[in-house]
Image (cartoon, rainbow, N blue to C red; front, side, top):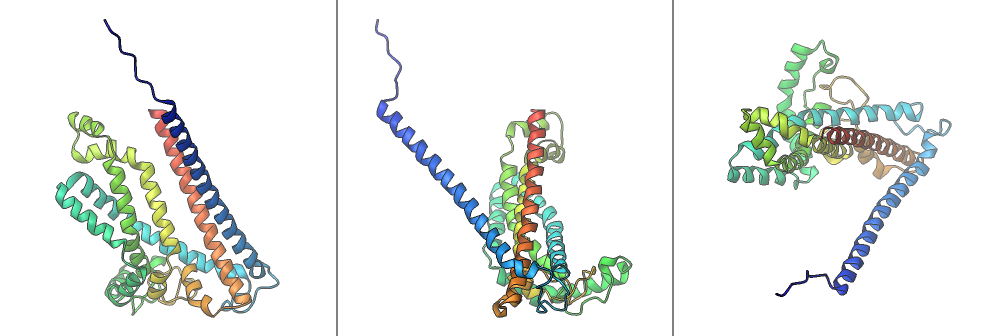
Length: 318
């Protein structure tokens, strides 16, 4: 009677695997360090070049009629946050609905076609979106703005004289919503497709409807990914330049979303003025960019905290 000894890995193969692991680990560490170093240098550059504008005694007269840097930059910060919030409010439910339709309702061949079309939207340059928003969307929005003013004018967001050109912060928000839609849809679609089929089948087997199954299994599983996709879309909306610059008629701050010549954003302000800026005015624009950097950093920190809290809750329930 003969016995077979279990096969063991050769020393050469073990050595090769160990070397590969070390190389991969070193590359990963190097990539992470490079990202942190680049981020630190960007922050340092913005801070150093912004100091002449942030200092209260050195603020120049180039930034409209503001008496100091903060009175100059806060309307830009408010406009940036408002237009990004409009984009997310419009894009999030549409992206969620399209993703659910592709992953759980549509026939597979039809779903793949819709997925390709949505992904194609991400390849369109922002300047094309800006031209579409300025020439096509803005005139179409004028009757809507007039209706909102006539029926909801008692709300500050819809007060003021409605725009006759449609080039308002609301139009910019709609354009940004279309631009961030492919990002949110693609990420949510992939997350929804990763939900364990056994959980879905168990819910359906217990008598749940398709929508009840989605609420019980899909949304809890994908919650962290949905938040991450929203934050990525928000980052794209906060930093968008050309589309907003082409659509928006910049000016001072106003709570009305229907008024032209109000609520410029930080990216559009920099894009319009930086090519001709020098000296103190250039420092003011770089300082505005520093404020955008801070806003983006705060948003990402909050998003990471939300994702981590949901992950801890999920670990506690499992």
